[in-house]
Image (tube, rainbow, N blue to C red; front, side, top):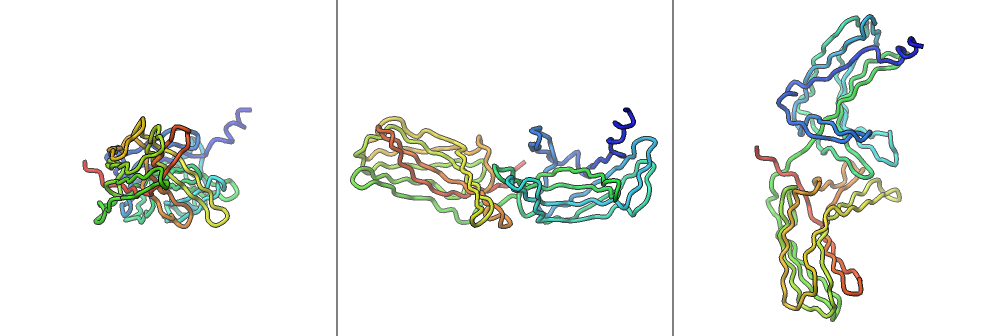
Length: 301
């Protein structure tokens, strides 16, 4: 049976080495099998360059119809798993058809690559960038090797960042005013705010502030919306009195947030909300939701 086992081994080993692999920052990503691996981090307009080594298994020759490397930016919907939508596709031909008897190394380079969207792994959708090496062998079945990369894009602080002021009330029962110091926050920011009780005629038991992420995928009748509560922060326990003011100070860095993504390639959006929840003694819930924008600030080394 040994010859059968050998028949399913790949005819060669492919390795992809980045030119600046030793100095480039690596970040963890979770693979489909649940394993976490470290992959190189890039941002838009960077060069992606390196070497691809192909080594035939000892004593074997590899006949091929050409070798190529592709840089692909792909969106995959989980309800349509396996179907990738390519929004970026760049190709470099590495070799013409021929035969390979020993290890060969090919340099490759994709210069100032436009990678407008960030890598994203969500509930119903993922956006990924991969290098894909294909040894085309026609009827014998092509040999393919993938290498993931992560893309993160940084934004400068917004020039205009207004505070959020809102009033919420139930006629003749409750009237509160809340204020957040700004409407746009970076991933390591702090939400600072205040809540004023102008009228309190119902017995409030407690009050929480939640950070919610809403991911919507698809369009029209096929829109799927997933809402996750990422953080719950108790602001108050017990009944407030009229004229009382409660401070808010919520650090974002402990939570796994991403930047806000608006209508990425007409495929998906990711939005964040601050949700203020009040619970009265009869366990009735009152809430007020407010969208905030989250962006990635360039990290200072």
